[in-house]
Amino acid sequence: MNRETPDARSRLAVALDLSDRTALLAMARLLAPEAGVLKVGLEAFVAEGPTLVRDLVASGADVFLDLKLHDIPNTVSRAAAAAVRTGASVVNCHALGGAEMMKAFGEGARSAAAKAGLDAPKLIAVTILTSLDAAAVRAVGLGGSPREAALRLAILAKESGLDGVVCSPEEIETIRAALGGDFLLVVPGVRPRSGAAGDQRRVATPADAIRAGADLLVVGRPITAASDPAAAARAIVAEIAAAR
Ligand code: C5P
Image (tube, rainbow, N blue to C red; front, side):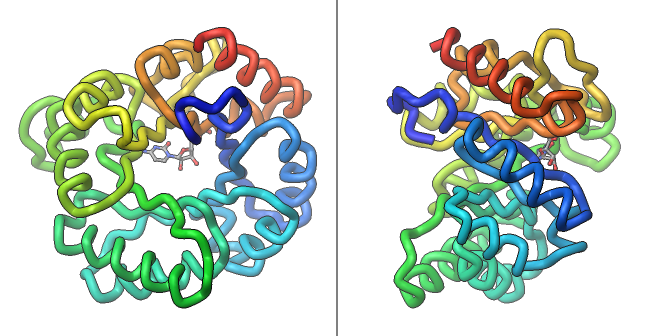
């Protein structure tokens, strides 16, 4: 995830959105050599729980535990602590939970890591889901464009002491310019040129997202639903390497 790293693989997180433990672990084994980060999201976590995350960490993987926590500060602080105890390298919450919630998220996570003798994980906040377009953002009552809303939330996340945000490809340049080179930008909604967008609305190619300033690209179905997932991941890593 280091922007200066020579290893393009470390810039790819594969979303392992599968609910079957055996299938997920097989996909993880196949993709671990190709991608720097394996992402466990709600589908897999609700089905298989923290044991699955611990098993992936024990296999040597860097795991992004994508739970998008969003609740009152006390609950989020405790859930963040439990998430960190799985050994995940990246954990997240929703910026829409507000500044107090994000501060509680950071404090809960960092103190749990210190108590467990773990490296502090990267703590990030989701700004606006990449599946929401401008009309959907207006419909939930947020003012301004998705880009303006995402920038406001990213500033709030930084002020709340978090390491970075999840944002769509369309917001990378704006947030990077406002918040500087050290703020981690994790970007889903990434589609290889030939891929279908699915339910993602604000999308870009891997090369465009990297050139715009993304640190870590999150890609799920274009890899996991491909006939040859390892080859699909390798093609994206090659695109990342060529873009830098
Ligand atoms: O299959 P696809 O490439 O669309 O997967 C994207 C992944 O990124 C999913 O696991 C989704 O939950 C996650 N994500 C997202 N938009 C966000 C935050 C996370 O699509 N804002």
